Image (tube, rainbow, N blue to C red; front, top):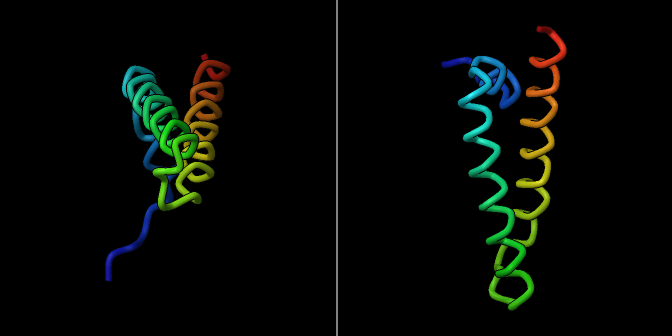
Length: 69
């Protein structure tokens, strides 16, 4: 049985450029989900919250890496 790594551990392993790309992708996905929600085409409302938490997680790790320098 393989050990499950947390999302935070996976993100901390990435460099700042990769995290910036990840953040950009998450922001685009969040915008798309918000538009789907506004037009009532979003079937899974919990996806908005999950995406928002992922964005916060990436921003936090970017801030930690910047403070460590």
